[in-house]
Image 1 (cartoon, each protein chain N blue to C red):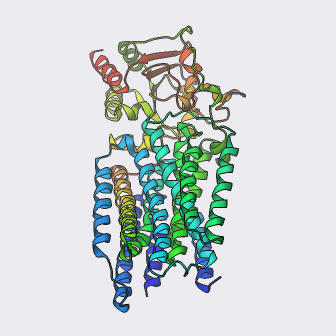
Image 2 (tube, rainbow over the protein chains, first blue to last red):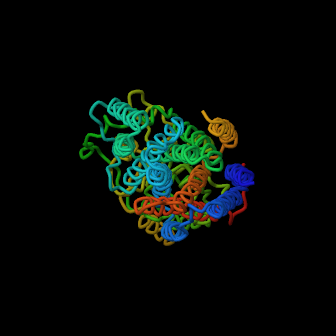
Image 3 (cartoon, each protein chain N blue to C red):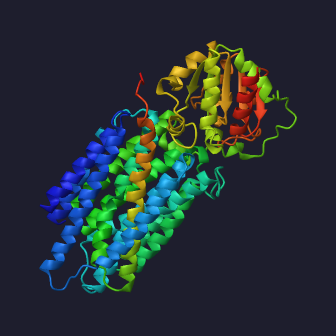
Length: 466
Length: 98
């Protein structure tokens, strides 16, 4: 019966994931998945109660369950309800890290339990011990890797790729050491091996993520999400629970496919994202001081916009940081009142996460039908009078068309094909890719150096006075 | 290998294939909520955490149990809530995407 109810929760997860794949059904899908989680949790609570009833030796430590659940539930709820939409990506990274950490802890609890309850001489079958090692290794890598991703997105850790001694071979060496520690733990029945394994896994999570540039963090988080699913499935093998195996494998696979799709949106392979050390060469300080730039005032920009017929707005991370989604919407409304056609071009990886801009603009009530994706937007730029770039950089960098550039081949928005390009940006500093952007120095480009929100409000005010 | 372990492998492989199939072409708009929702589902490890916490034996095992429970709950509660918050914003408007 328990197994059937776990199957039910697995079916609910599948229906939920499928719902999440389409805009119409996404919210319902998430709710269905949450119900699946509730079913799995209740089934497990009944299961432990029943186990304890049947055995005199076991009793359920309800206070341990409740205390842990209250602490975790409160932290999770507060974080989820307090977070600003702009900080969503790093929060997902953090949640994911906790999930991976929980799987590793479950595996640790299982080995500690055999030591204390049944005595050290009774042990798991070898194949189960392998899953203990995998659960710990993958769970801990997910934990430490997710927090490095969190740090990079928050700006605590440099967004630039950090080169490791020996490059990818350094991490390969760590994997070999982890295998050795696992063999020691399993073949020689030496629990200390698992702790060493966990310690190396902490390092691997850090050194695995830190060489990857901040721009690629969405892909990394998605991959770590996939890994946390695998870790959960491995924990399922450890404790012999099919509910964990079903859901863990499901998320592992779905997360992996999503990772592939995200990489494709950037025209790169996963291997390229993970090992290329994207932008390392360009990380040297950029000497832009002596190149001429057309610096503009909000009034100049307002005039350019007011007499345009077609305007395309390109939002980027700067818009998110400045919380400027409402300001951009107000400016667009003011332009529409003057019969200017306003559309938005959303690059697949604009912001810190795919779909990040869509979420923000949806928050500001921008209708769906004026949001253009890359393929819809690019044919329109040559017929556009003004493109207004708000805090975007790498996704509009024309050097992606030049062989030899570190971002060569990345699909970009062809904003430079419009008659006039306005860039609102705080400085000439490079984006996550760490390279200079020739767009800023083009004769048809006006640079407005300012915080995105302030700039948009000033343009709006200037426009009203025209 | 025990029959249960082999059965586990069967379940794992089949569930993985379903996971591959269920994520077909997803519009980039939904990549963030989908990743966040899948992340919440990976909190299924709460099942293991409940078992670990319920039968913890000794102070160290109890600490592990509380931590496992707390970590898993952060993942589950936070994950579903934050996904719902994101999707709530999409819902207010009619979907006219071509």
